[in-house]
Amino acid sequence: MRKLFLDACNGEKSKVPPVWFMRQAGRYLPEYRALREKYRMLELCTNSELAAEVTLMPIKRFDFDAAILFSDITMPYYCLGAEFSIKEGIGPVVENPIRSESDVNLLKENTAQEKLNFISDAVKILKNQLSVPLIGFIGAPYTLASYLIEGKPSRDFKFTKSLMLKEPLVWSKLMKKLTAVSLSYIDLQIEAGVDVIQVFDSWVGGLSPRMYEKYISPYMKEIFSHIKSRNIKSIHFGTSTGGILDKMKSVGADIIGVDWRTSLIEASIKVGKNVPLQGNLDPNFLLATKEIAIQETREILRESEEIGSFIFNLGHGILPTTPIENVEAVLAEIRNYK
Ligand code: CP3
Image (cartoon, rainbow, N blue to C red; front, side, top):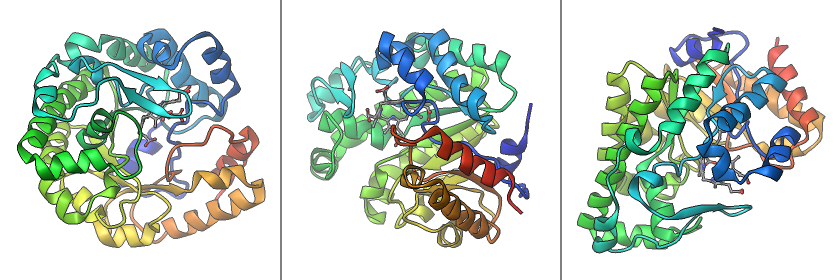
């Protein structure tokens, strides 16, 4: 197995950094769009052979240094018995949003082992075929809670913050249920063979450091200490997290993912010089010209020389209209750096 990515996760700095892209398996790929003509998103996620096939698409095309399991952060909703769908161009939509104690009480507590065996089957298929490490992932309890409570993607997280602030006991009950299912889901993926786990707390950057400390940290500590106890490295990612990066490190993650709103150097100062970082090209650069994308890639590579070990990634998921040739150009630039 090619180990460049795992070496960087372990803190080893290389001349040419490993590279993979968040949402690398998705709609910018013509072969993915062709498959989506036949199957809905959730059909792809719940069919192990198809999920494995989609995971491999970007590896075959671009030879990324790591694969990420094709799935979605919403899978644990099957364990909770929460009715949801993924609406094209919108994201996860939950039928009956969870906004009261009785709503929380109604959530079931099935484990991943009871409901998500299609995920472990997909991981097993992939481990037989991949020659690069496989990243498993979960959505963090806060980001999972935000879709459950808002019912759909949100800008202000009004209902989520209101529940947290006005009903702290209900909030903690919900977070405990989400944490429990997350732990079983982590175990399922590790036992099936994933090499690293990325925890997506995509929307947590909307919280103040004080709110993070009070309403989020206890659950994240449990999650990261669980991953650590299984001897697997963890990556912790969110967007707009410049104000809470130190907190996100202190809950126990090994590698910190940063978006483009924070420079790598500033992030490194905040989380500690020896902490491996992953990021942080704004995916919009891939929509500009090749030359513009390459220039920014070089800026990031130059900056990465000043920090500890580094994994090249985007600052958030690749956008659906990204031209394939721009991805190729950026990858060539990274691999020929220096
Ligand atoms: O990175 C990868 O290639 C692996 C696959 C992956 C998907 N979702 C596939 C997907 C991963 C790691 C995710 C995680 C995910 N899902 C996150 C965390 C990462 C992030 O972007 O912040 C979040 C917040 C979700 C929830 C979600 N699911 C959103 C916001 C959307 C996009 C809605 C849209 O259509 O723009 C989805 C759907 C989704 N998840 C798609 C894919 C490929 C698009 C499905 C399609 O229409 O084919």
